[in-house]
Image (cartoon, rainbow, N blue to C red; front, side, top):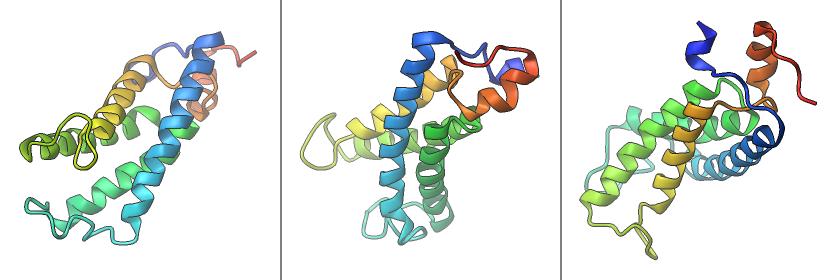
Length: 146
């Protein structure tokens, strides 16, 4: 059952590359979520197409909790699915408003970046330099990182 959620954990330079990707994107995503944590149920107020309060809170949790968990490589597939869903909605929001890919305000560049990182980590896994490896990879008999 674990192989369904975790492919073989990457080793060597690929594990190091996944670690760098996870930490960089995870910290940046955490900072985005942290801005929303002050008002988790109302951070979209003032937007013409604001979603309901529980979904605003879910988006904040996906960004803040997902950012921390992805950086650590902890239950990575689950958090990546949450981030991917949140970023899909954010991309749709920006496109519906006519937002450009890159622009001074209202672009969907960041949401696209986090969606792609989540998709990559879903497909490649978190690598051996992750909490997931120590929780699940060793259970499958994979060797620890060298």
